[in-house]
Image 1 (tube, rainbow, N blue to C red):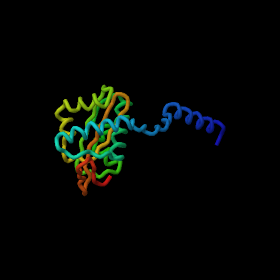
Image 2 (cartoon, helix red, strand yellow):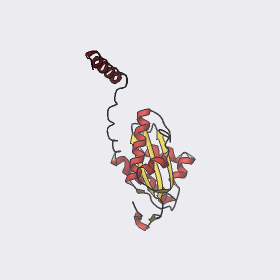
Image 3 (cartoon, rainbow, N blue to C red):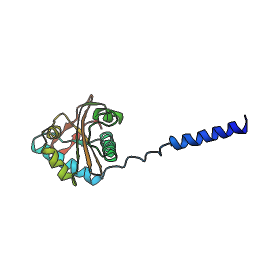
Image 4 (spheres, helix red, strand yellow):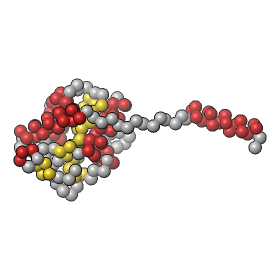
Length: 171
């Protein structure tokens, strides 16, 4: 191999590095504020109790799915149930949750958990998810001005709510 051949290889490698740089690794998805999650869970469960419905139980897999999607919406400045061709069921499944039913509420522009919850209640489709008695588990995502609530029920064992706000079910 001549010096000319070596120089050509080096120049080609530099051009490739400049035109196709390796993207930096993505930082881990930041967790949503635990205070906001607690407020959202309380708002959802208080509303469901007034209707005689069972309470929702936080599920970490669903929280992960909701938060990752919310971060994606914030990064892309778009409000959508679909990201990179994947919908809520795909995202929930990717976190290891085997669902028999799921639903998703998304929103943007709200400053507080109370405001986004009221916005969802004012929309018939979002309200239907909040009031769906099939849903037993929930996870929330918050990033920038974007919000996600993912609802689901596991395949196999239906969760049950007991008097006093206790919940049974696999998580």
